[in-house]
Length: 261
Image 1 (cartoon, rainbow, N blue to C red):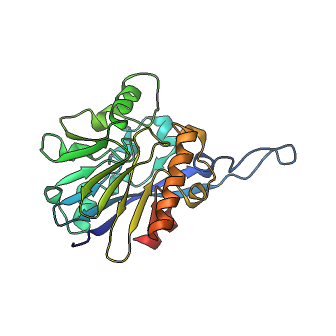
Image 2 (cartoon, helix red, strand yellow; image 1 turned 180 degrees about the vertical axis):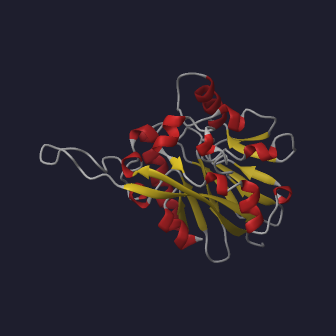
C-alpha cells in the first residue's frame, strides 16, 4: 500500500494570553496578587494529505478579513490572528504547489472560526466537506442562538457546501488515513492517525492546543465543551501514540509544528 504524503501549511500567527490556553497559567494568589501574564504566539496550520485515492485538505484556517471586522471584536481582541490577511487559503496552497482545484476533499476538525474561515472557497462545488455528526448541529446552534460557543460564525459554514457526515469514534477516510472522534474542545472534534512511511502522524489538533495540554494540564474552561470528554479523548490519544510511536501534531503549538513540519 502506498502511504500518504503530508504537506504542512503555515497559516499564520495568533497572539493570545497563555491563560486562555493553559488553565491557571496566570492566577492571582494571596502571596502573588499581580502575576505576570504571558502574551504568546500560536500557530494556525492546515495539512494537504496526498493519498492514492485523492488529495485531502485538513481544515481551512481563518478568514483573511479576520482582523478587519469579520471576526467579532471581543473574540479578535482575545485571539488576534494578526497576519490572517497575508495567509489566504489560495495563496498558502499555491506556496506549497497546490491550487484550490486540486483539492478532492476537505476534513474539518471542527468548525471554529480559525478553522472554518476558508470554507467559502468550496461553496457551490461538489467537493465533499467531512464533519462529525456531533459538530455540525452544535455549530449551527451556537452561531444561530445566544447559547453554545461564541467561536462559531454562521458566515463561515452556513453555505452551499457538500457536507459528508462522519459517524462514530473512528472513520476510514482513505488508505492510511483514519479519522478519530475526540470530543472535549467541541462535541465533534476530529483528529486523525495518518500512516506515513515509517513515521506515522497523530493529528491531535485542538484536543491539545500546546504541549502543556497534552501533558494533562487542561485548557481554560472557556475552551472546553466538556472537561470529562476532553480527558477521555486525551487518554485515547496517548494510548494511540504509545501503540504506534506516532509523532504528534498539536492544535496551535508553534514549536511542535516547526519540529514536525
